[in-house]
Amino acid sequence: MTVHGKEIKIFTGNSNPALSSEIALHLGLGMGDALVTTFCDGEISVNIHESVRGDDVFVIQSVCHPVNNNLMELLIMIDAFKRASAGQITAVIPYYGYARQDRKSKARDPITAKLIADLITSAGADRVLTMDLHAPQIQGFFNIPLDHLLGGPILAKYFIDRGFLANEDIVVVSPDLGSVSRARSFAQRLNVPLAIIDKRRPKVNMVEIMNVIGDIENKRVLLIDDLTDTAGTLAQSAHVLMSQGAKEVYACCTHAVLSGEAIRNLAESPILEMVITDTIPLPHEKHLEKIKVLSVAPIFAEAIKRIYEDVPVSPLFA
Image 1: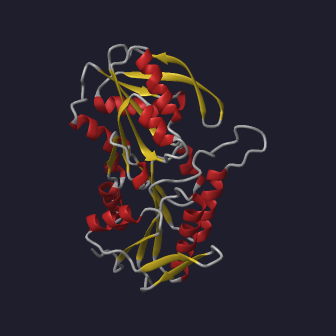
Image 2: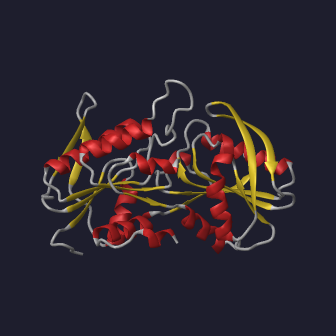
Image 3: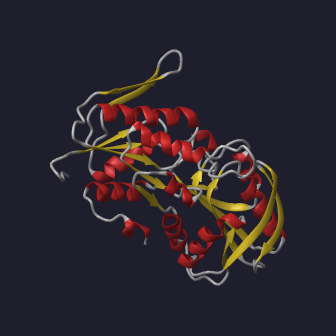
């Protein structure tokens, strides 16, 4: 696969090598030869063992746990490729960490999502490819091109294949007001009604459910969000939905952060199935029978191919 006389090369950090290998496999390519390790004092060491001069380099790295290590790996790798005269460097970030710090919600708050965008740009990235940013306005934090893929079509296809399409006893539920647009789009894909949970959050990682807006009585409900961290919102939402007459509760999200008591919260919740993607790797100790993992490798591979060949990425949003 050669365009403009340059080669395409795929490299990965340590955050999600399994996804990176699957993306390369879909492209019919091998992984680039690079080693990312740490010195004894914890500093990150990057060694590139092949020439990238004039090549289109795609660095695949999710900014997930351990967030700061993975972020530094990404920045240092980008800098290394820039200094090695790569023709174009694309930062492929399936999960963009720090995205929840996208605005000042109180006095003297940082806007860390903007800071991360500046760091990626300053390191030498020419463009960014990511999926389901927590806040869409983060796209405007970058002064370089950014392609924003959607996880919704992947999740929707799974439930359509399960018979949820245009089914009269299915309702899509937004777990909060901030996710209404995403849930509405998801409901339209399935051609089913939408309900909304009005919640209050007294403090970080603590949710108080207030009210369910919409008809969910004797329905199978499908909770949809962009990410789940401690799974407190999803678990509490599921309990409330069941208490207000829902027949069954399913949940899905693109990014499964699953920190803290997340696995316990999911295990003890009435959620029958939790569908996630592999933008963040799921450690063995976090596997539950009710968790289903879908791969985003095909859509990222297609997006990388389209970027390399200078053709529109927008058809992937359909």
